[in-house]
Length: 259
Image (cartoon, rainbow, N blue to C red):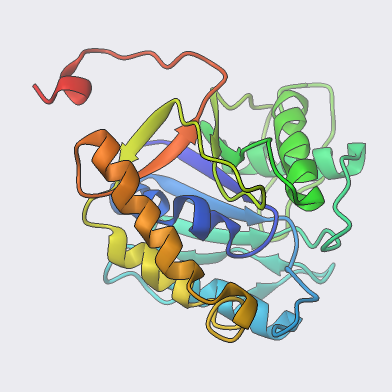
């Protein structure tokens, strides 16, 4: 099984872009860690306690059935420590919302997460976006992949986690949660049939961002419609799109042609 890190600029970005994939990977037994860079505050209808509570509820919605409820933890520095539910966990690094910057310090924080989680695969937002936080988050996550492998480099230990040796995640993939009005151009799709309900529940957990915010009216339904559209491109009921700069190696054609 793989150790997977999903980098999210704000709580709800991971659920928007790949919530069904997260639920599927966790159900398959992979060890998935969602790493929110910020608490997502301020927003018009959500304060910090509300946003943290909603993120925990979304985590529970995406978690495998019959898993224990997430137990929130608070780090000494104010960031939320890992809330564990089965094979799915969440951590928040507490970078400043709307002011995320691509700095050495931010890179090292994320690289420390890669090491501590022993990451094999990292998912990050696609690099074409209109939100400065998203753009910075992608650059941070990309460069942190390099930093994490430097054996002579001491890195900060994430809240609630343990330090670990140098690590280079083998794969870095991009998911789509863009504020830019563009058509996604994925290089591969993941069949998430059967996990549509988990994604919707994860999105609906963010009441302050969607149901309570008139500016986002109908957004959950539009995101869910994307599952159906990309499913039609994959020949399945539902799929989520991803992008890779690196070639993906197949051991056989079984997963492609359905043998």
